Every structure is written in C-alpha cells, then in structure tokens.
Image 1 (cartoon, rainbow, N blue to C red):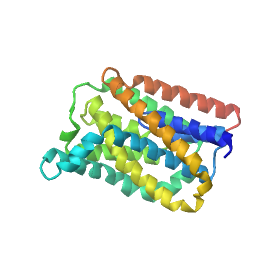
Image 2: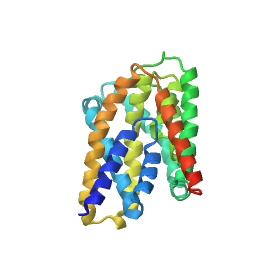
Image 3: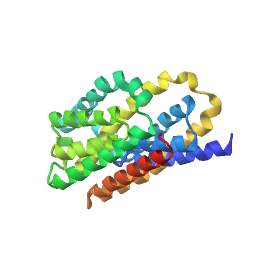
Image 4: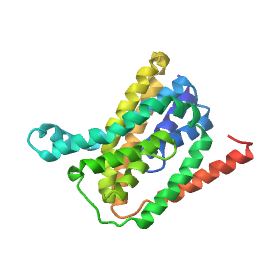
Length: 271
C-alpha cells in the first residue's frame, strides 16, 4: 500500500475527528482538504463517508452507559421513550429533504467556493446568536419536548442543503435559540448525529458499493480508527469548553478561514 495514500488517510481522519462535532463544518473541511491533497474521485468520496462512521462510533462509545440504560428502560421510564422519540422526530426532516436533494447538492455545492461562503455566513450567524443568547435554558436532554426536537431537526437540514454550514453548528445553535442550554444543545446535537449520519452513511455506501475494493481496506481502516480516536478527544474537550465559554471563537475561525479561502480562490483565478 502506498505510504503517501496512508498519510492522506491519516490527515483526513484527523480532519474528520476534529471537525465533526464542533461548529465549523466537517464536510466543508473535508472538501477543502481533499482538493488540496488531490484526494478526489469516487473511491475517495466513499472513504470520506466511511470515516464519518468512526466519528459516530466515538459518540456511541462515550455515551454507551446512557444508551444502554435507555434501551433497558424503554418500557419503564417515560424519559427513555421521550429521548428515542425525539431522535426519530429530529431525524425526519433530514430524511424528507436530504434524500431527494442529495445528488443535486453533491454535484453543484460540494465545491470550495460554496463551502467558503457558507463558512462565513455560518460564522456571522453564530456571532448573532451568541450576542442575543441568554445562558439560562433547559439542561436535561431527557426532558426536551417533541416540538423542540423537531425544530432542531429542521435546523439540521440547513447543513444538508448548504455544505459548510455545519451539522453540529446548525443543531447546537438551533437548540440554543429554541431554549436549550449550551451543554444540553451540544449533547442533543451529539445524539441526533447518530441516526442522521449513520443512516446517510449506510445509504451512500450502499449506493457506492461498486467502488469498494478489498485493496482499499487498509486505507479505510486507518482513516476510520484515526477519526474515532480524535473524535473521542474532541467530544470530551467540547463539553468542558461549552460549560464555561461561548462559541464565539469558532465563529471567528469560520469567518477567517472562509475569507482566506475566498481570497485564495480569487488570486488563483477562481475555484
């Protein structure tokens, strides 16, 4: 196996793990880095889908006790049934809107210029929300009403329609504006990622199975493991971060990175 290809797999695994659960857009960063590394094509696109599964597994692993408790108490605890129902309800908008538009969006918007614009716009929106947000809010994800879960699910659709907006950014900011505390919004964003990302990954992998090859297994495994390990660290760190700080620093990073990409594209004669 080509050592350079493995190195690219490690880099992209790090990018996925770092960016999937913070509000900076993992899809946007992967598109940019893949273009920079020359790691593009059908197989490479399948690889980017596969490493998302590593990030999802990190959430499942870190919250394994909670998920096991929910599974064991579905028949006895209303809170467990409410959480499961909310995850289903929150995923419905992504299924209804995401599946029919997926092909068009990947063809027309999975490009550096739309991503750069979305990074800047998303950063500005985070600044506006943080400026108006009041820290008091619902702290318990088990008590979220279904209407709020549906609202967060609708916010998640923005990230599907506009690569670079950030799924985690849309759901966290959406949760905050609808009445969740920063920590509760962040945790619900983690949980909502599981059905949304897992379902999308399975559908995409099934549709791209003709591009899968046994020779690519080492590359896929390296990216998967690296994404999983990095995401473990990031999730723990993000929860500590939001318990004391706002998301303003992420907003300024998005704006700076997006503007830098726009300037780079301009002087290169366009994307």
